Length: 239
Image (cartoon, rainbow, N blue to C red; front, side, top):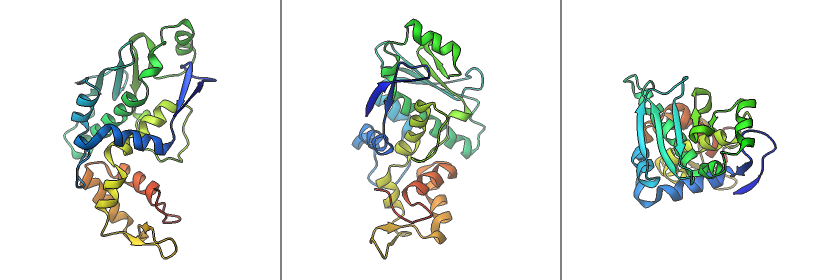
């Protein structure tokens, strides 16, 4: 992790984590209790409640907000809010709730320190003069549909680095790489050059569907994670 003075945006400082650092932080936070021995869905709701010692509250949120993380003045997590409008009774919406929880878990994990000095006049001025989803008056981050999307390590973002980091945590929490590799053992082949496991192009669609079902995530989340671990262009595995 690196911290430096932000040149723009609502925060005085910016924290930087590499994609690998975020994956490792998520894995360490999950710990032995929440990383299963065999591939299966991560108990993301229970993890957030226990690890961050906070409530998860389901209610109608304002202005199309899907998820929200609120912090205490000491940077600890006060509560995570999930909009009840997400759930329409279909499996895809249930999986979207899981992705939203993982996204908010990313904020819980990485961004509490950003609110320690958030009451200064400079921050409040920044909030009113720039488009932001940061609510300093209530110490919270408000996440709308455009904010919550699984993302690969190389994907461009709109400058809101805190949302890019939270989106990276979706894969980190819901699709730990070691478990994904284990689940795909029968579909992988050894590279003739490096002898590293690769995912053949003919198996990619099957693998995406299998991972989505095995880990209870939407296919788009599985597709992005697999594209990162096994890039279609080269077939190389990211370690």
